[in-house]
Amino acid sequence: DTEVTQTPKHLVMGMTNKKSLKCEQHMGHRAMYWYKQKAKKPPELMFVYSYEKLSINESVPSRFSPECPNSSLLNLHLHALQPEDSALYLCASSQVAPAGSYGYTFGSGTRLTVV
Amino acid sequence: AQSVAQPEDQVNVAEGNPLTVKCTYSVSGNPYLFWYVQYPNRGLQFLLKYITGDNLVKGSYGFEAEFNKSQTSFHLKKPSALVSDSALYFCAGFGNEKLTFGTGTRLTIIP
Image (cartoon, rainbow over all chains, first blue to last red):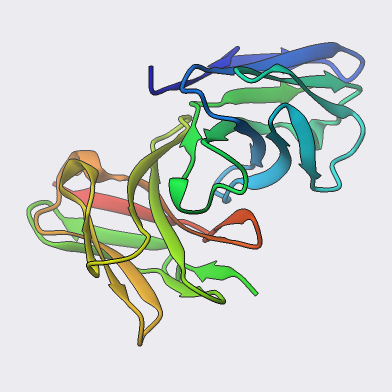
């Protein structure tokens, strides 16, 4: 298995809703990442987990809450989002963090629309 | 400081012609450089990477990239473009424990 799987692929949520994005990998990678990508822009790093512990938070608003229950699974809990949070959310993994020469494997993303 | 620049927002190439997508970098130490491709509403697909060794790196789908230390460049190339190569291409460099992306280049292959 050489993939990062993200679910759901599409999500529409209201500003008062609570939802979660899920990311899974079975490559034995010990680092997992959340990125946010707006249309026609490069991905922006949000969070880094290394050995299931949060190692980097890029000053992301608290309405985004990451969770890493085990080495294969990464969640992003969403609450009270704003329309400007609409974006493609990408999950990635690497053998370790910092990834260095190992590189990253990206999932296909969740397209989030906040209404 | 770590940065990666893609000077062209858009590149158009006729099908069958060679293509080049440009990338320059600014890093301290040995650069780790990557190319990714993104199709509409999809995630990033890894194409190739430069870590060390040969300056010409071969990757997926017939793409290759040339690392040029004196020009601090890492241009993506393909000898003969296909319509299916039309996509958004990102150059990225690793530094300061993070992967930094260029702004992306939209490649359009014209039949």
